[in-house]
Length: 300
Image 1 (cartoon, rainbow, N blue to C red):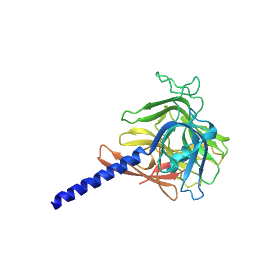
Image 2: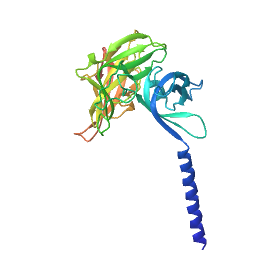
Image 3: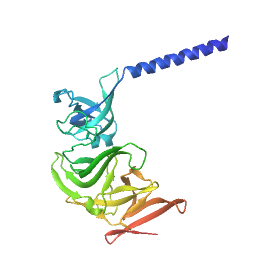
Image 4: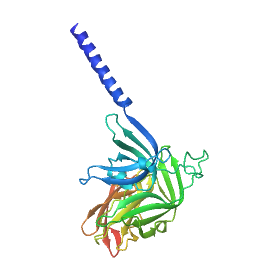
């Protein structure tokens, strides 16, 4: 009898928990729409950040509302004046919206700027598309990577290029705090083939060769075990130059940071460490580079 009472009590608790969860879900609001960002800000502590935005298909600018953005990387990539297709959530017990996901809104009808694109998938994009938006430490400037000629598409089948696919000609563009262009550098001049990126990302900046200037890696898909990376440097005039490495690029497996801009392990004096997985040897191979005579060279 006592065991039966315990079983009934346990079932009752499970039912109450289920009802509570259902109540929370039913009383929360998840919205997906195009948003136009009119302002972005953060509190002095840097612990909270948000955007002010409105749905241009259903609202006026004066109806802009606040959306909290938990992830600083995502917040940095969102630009005032741009439109994104976003999903955001509000709980019933408060008026605070929280951003779930945002992608550049490239699926808009080219005839009047509203509504879904035609079924054939022809989309008019009337400005460069920014895929990386990285603040430059110690300055009021931002380093952007922008697609200026090429194509945007989506491929959600599992594979190396799953996601939003940006392919074609890119430029590095440095802008000041109000959006004025300071310097541009064509990225494709360093490559012999079109470039492809599948999501927004931040560049990982560091001084790799010990010259006091900020450097970063930029990667392209290699194979299932690793990617090919080149190293670039931000010059005093904000132009971008390539730092030579053995074989023109580094084949790296893993690494910290985004797959398109990993952070290499660096020592003082321009020494770098990285590794790659060797299919032939069946293990990871450790590599070491040193900066000498204006280029990185292999070290033992």
